[in-house]
Image (cartoon, rainbow, N blue to C red):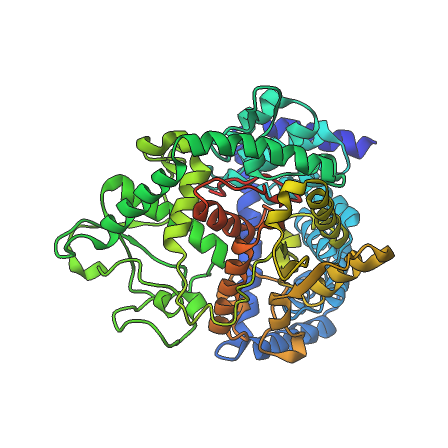
Length: 589
């Protein structure tokens, strides 16, 4: 109890401070960042010039020898823990880091042990170590966010709200979207609805609540979520669907399709309808060798860039730097496509960065920009909202080449499931596979109850085709097992494993995905055929966006992008609201 009170007071004190905190907090933060960078730098010293797997083996031997030479060296045990974690030996990494903690029970060591425990699925024990790290001064937005979300899952709502407020204030303004929506969810669970509405304004400008004239409820276009992690019911989903249908009737009456067609035409004119020579350009650099971001995050950055280009009357072009997701070389791009983007997608424009001297650069998050700029929607379409506009931008940008989509099952898909696992548990508490199964079965029950929705059932005859996309070996099979448990798997439910088929275990080489990430994706994925994985991910995302129903966790950029594509393709009139197992749709920046 005393520890809980101390944590509540600490969260409360930080929630009223500016995000930069006191000078003492800033000193602690700098010390923490310096230590992390030191560990990563030292890890690279003995492995220079070798393949990633060879790097890690050599680093492991290096630190193991240091430990044998001096078993009382905290730094040696820490270095060994980092090398072991990077090579996916998580149990051994935990043991090494716990030894470092025994030698020096510092805030940083508590934090590292806590993160490892969470990666191993020991959420409660991991959070306890993170709480100790914060109490001892290692205060960061990541730790406060993790603790706040855990407190929320435990229904300790007031403590959760205090910690999530602190996490929000500790985060740079351009990156507050995910923190703001986490705080929104805690306020909703506490039934503090006005505060939830205010918090959500930091995540998006769409209305959090809407009314059909009879009742007011959460906006189903943002996702149907289960209150306090309870099971989503068929009745709950049908109520949200009816509310969405009422909104769709209003949209139909105001020519949503016409607006969508008009905006797509304006974007095409901006990007390809004028002379390139001397035209004002806005240049976006796809993430490269300095770190890299995932496919969903990259396209959210591109959407921001296209919005800025539209606002300024400029043509969006790509910088002539290599996109890490394209790999070192790939077929299919133009000679002038230095980035490799056109290995997978149709050109954004026929213009290139060298066509004009009037060029401005755009990098999301590099320069502070106001909420008005982040959430900007063209005045003509302002009534449509941010989600509608982002969906239209995604629709324009995400145009895979025909050969990339070869092999995508073009039959109608009743439900697409994005089962995000892997390294995501370093950011959030993962939903159980059973939670995904329960959501799919609830949708199936809702479809049976709602006779009018039978037209939305897809597949051959009465079959309802379910596709599963995951980034973890075995996760799709676990979901199928949950669906089948207790005889619940209905005869008409046909499950297809999409991305899971492309993922091998570590010894299978090509499809293997590292779970333990260093924060530098380019380095983490050195042993992966990244161009092939990118093409596979594009196909999976495309298939998810084509499904009649979507079950996912909207904390994932990949899942939100799939929904934005579906939303944009349907001009915002989505008959079946998506199911999100954690947070509502939001802008991540």
